[in-house]
Length: 283
Length: 123
Image (cartoon, rainbow over all chains, first blue to last red; front, top):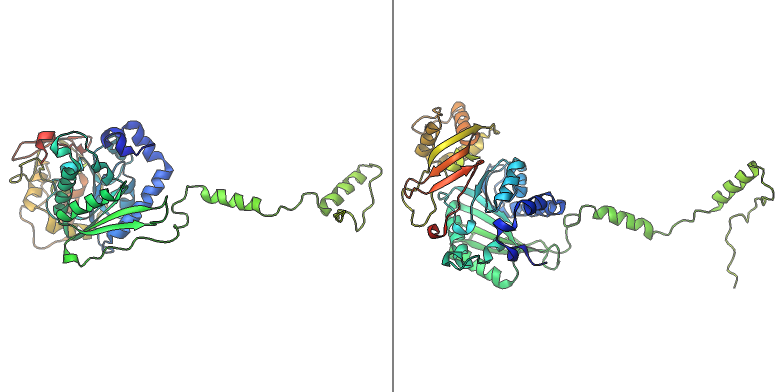
């Protein structure tokens, strides 16, 4: 199936049914949670300091719940009313806004200690109407410039997103740079088809002193990228691989013979050292 | 779920509306009180970012007069408790926020403000 962002604009794609489906899917939950934790790691906020974060494209609050757990105060924006409704039902702690990020933010300068955004940026790459303000470069420019001013100096913004091509990454990073951000793209598990994740790490301020963090490499983390019951599947697989012990071994035969004798069956063979032994190969 | 902390960070973002666009004025609002966890460090970190006059005005408009007109030099526990209550426990459920400059109305329904702009208002 084609990518969701190619099918319809987000506020229509995530209608009532899709919003519920998305939120109740344990696999989606798991992936979103992993990416949120990774984004927080990349955000590398000073420890033990409470922070106010902006969750861009908060959706139904899957990432927000983790921010709650980690003790951050946050404000979330999303363009899909159905998703926000689900977020309300789930009683997340943050304030929610119905807002199109491509239209820019109205937050006062220096409002936030950081921003995260999970699986959102790709939605900005499609023009919905032919109006000049609807073109992807225009929307991205508006988004990044208003975000840049809403963040404190120094701070970071981490975006996980699904680009379809290197051109898209190029477009996004160049516009972000024009808006004043430093930073770059971090790719986790670049050689894995499933676990590959692209993070855009943007920095505000501190004159390029901040380094783009390294992407995770090598083997996929055990358990993190797997379906929920994969471990169980594997376990049962191992069992069948082992050479199975025969059921009708010597003990079983002796037990059976004993049973027959007890029941008074005639012509039960006597037990000997040959009982239950394999015949040698005939040739 | 618009809390005053959010309201205090929020300015109008319509096209050409760049001056006198803060704070947004409340209109016909109904509020709900919901307890939140008290975190003194968070409030202290937030204080320099708060536009004090806007906060006090908004709080008085919503009927809470516990905050002093001038931001106090000394931060004591009682002050922080009041600040916590005003910033984080008062939720605006229904109503609207109006830009003092361009009079754009941001409707709040079910606690969620509608910040969408129509095509001609996008900068």
